[in-house]
Length: 320
Image (cartoon, rainbow, N blue to C red; front, side):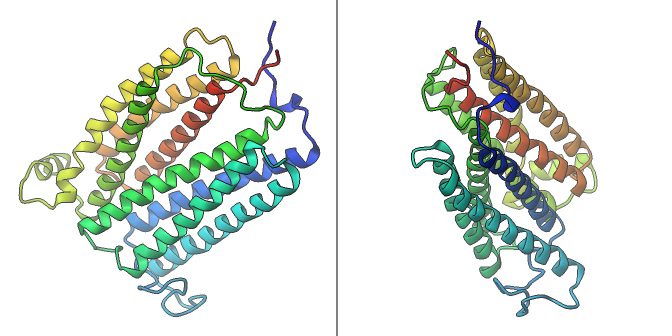
């Protein structure tokens, strides 16, 4: 009878295990950077360093920073550490894993997208798409930023996950999984949820409401800023997308006897339900900063779990 290979039972060298530990740390660091970036946006601190980049108000290190400057500078500093962490992973992967290893491929793609992430962040500052800017250009760039962030997290997660299974090749096939069309629709819904969430968060920050009723009235007021009128799409996409996602994941898990696949599938379902609850609380409480951060954390964890589930479903992690 086939048995699931436990992480502790993997036939990997100490160097590979050390790489896995470092990769998990880099992944966590990037999640923290993303969450702190939400703090920057929610507190209006994006202009804390003025329109200077990479300098902060013309200084390498601000000596007497205001609160907004401290928040923005801390975000830049942590982003730099995250970038160096990915560069370090690339160097380590080249010395540990063979050329055709999925780990090397995923870590290289992580480097590509963290470079893009840095350039988008710099563009937001240099073109002053921060602070109280409520232009369509900012909304567009924020959406692109969100999509790039999701791709970056996906490759970092896969870098860590595949390093746990260094002897596995891409030998599996999709079993009991919805059609490719269903998977495509699935991904589209997830991206729509993410983008609409980013726009809704921006709208909540720039145009806060004093009550839930007032917020709903603004949503349907034709004179409201477009960011306000667009934010209503987020709960629509979130609810409909969640139902679709949970149904597809349940179908993918049902009948699959591989424990690892089932564990990851149920992790996605559980996080999906938790994210819906968090979204509802965020809406009722008028999106306080702490709840926005928690909501974003659940979203990141859900996305990472989903990506790992898809990879686990597609590839065999079981002995013959």
